[in-house]
Image (tube, rainbow, N blue to C red; front, side, top):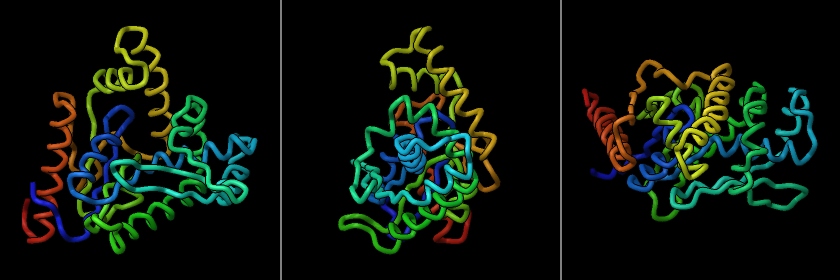
Length: 248
């Protein structure tokens, strides 16, 4: 796989358990570009709202609070980070945003349209920075993943991918990741969280079917390395088409 040396934006969407975060990180590392986990940004502002005691059922209050929360997002694919500045102090939230408390409430915050508009602007700023002013040792570009990257955040990205897999496979992967097992009890516990979150989030953004021009990568029958290879193959093909103006 050759390394793309011009600014490259790869947008990756997908449902819970599709592997989009880990696969996107690996792809970004292979391409030597930045990595952006947009979901971590939603989780960070959710954490901030919870800590501040904001009523999450009050959309106006949530939006008003989120606008006051500065985020510091690290885009190193080897060690991505997210932090919030609270009362003038930067608080590392890389681990805190993965707690059950945040997971249970992030969909409510992400459903607020004003929050989405705010974070989309921040995400676009991070994407632009990675393209025009990459950190030392990186090529200009970024792999950004989330729920609406291919359609809202970066609809003009050179490469747009929907990463998906059968629901049973996604549930088993998430159960092993979160609970260390894919037995019946673990699968059922995971199903309640994953399926419900996808259901709620699908009211706000489409991430289960590919929009026009978006390439679907189905990882149902692939292992992790195979999925990364499939994504990189799409990136190379799409980037080549963009450079030559012809088919991949």
